[in-house]
Length: 213
Image (tube, rainbow, N blue to C red; front, side):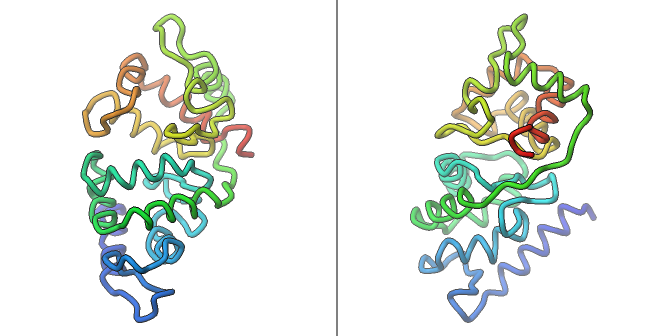
């Protein structure tokens, strides 16, 4: 059995257990459970209690823009986002979340402090920096910083990318490039211009982004 499947089964078991105290509740169907409690009792199982997930299967949420988290949780709740990790892990979790809980979760993770992620090779850093700052001009591919901010800090609906896991980013770039499972963003057009090697480079640069050190 895959490690990710074991994690999911464990999370489902914990979620189904529930708790008697509202301040220690894992009841996702209870609209009175405060968002910080859900973050610490449920979301932390995969994303870490401070949003700095260790496993690259799960994205880091520490310092993420509130608008982006709200949009993604809403998309999970309405099944608009249908990439495999989305429906495997998040559809059931987001199903009963209220708008206020979603906003509270976004605020909780936005307030967490990102920690440095693993370094990558100097070669990947140099190549990724070039793509992030300048795009790929010969392909008319726009620089990532144009939407995600010069420090990859995220701007409004565009997510913070600094310090994100390289593997997670590459997988999502391929979702944008090859599927219709994450609609409503300009990423489909951009990723069609990138090779896998270019994706690896810019994702590696973002994982070890200088401002995240």
